[in-house]
Image (cartoon, rainbow, N blue to C red; front, side, top):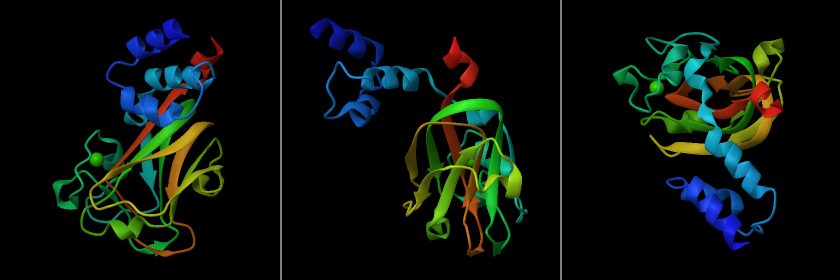
Length: 188
Ligand SMILES: [Ca+2]
């Protein structure tokens, strides 16, 4: 047991917070450690994706949410922004299927409540722009300018869609990070 724990600790230097989140209260000999190893190898795969949104407001192009910059001030040019309409959505095409462990959302600083009730959808379908793919989580509330992690527990898919279902409004996303591993690498 001691050797196993030491092995995990060495591999996770600098990532102990992440380890605590995953394995808190879980026996050290459980599958939990395998999950941590998966997370350690996961990268922000959204950076290499192609983003799109339901329609464009101002200079808030879809790419701004995957430009690697969490700046939450819209005028700085790093947030994606739709016009006001029913069920606005934003989507990133990861270009291949991934096992997604988590999604980190950074909201805009002045009107973060506009994101309340948004849903994170992950899957392989583009029907209805991917808004009906399996749901990872609902964004209940993100403090202004904060980045919040949503655990997706290895959901599989090529497309990650954020949608505000059934509400008329703007959708503003300053950064969407998707941490996962290509499905092909999991099979090796
Ligand atoms: Ca950004």
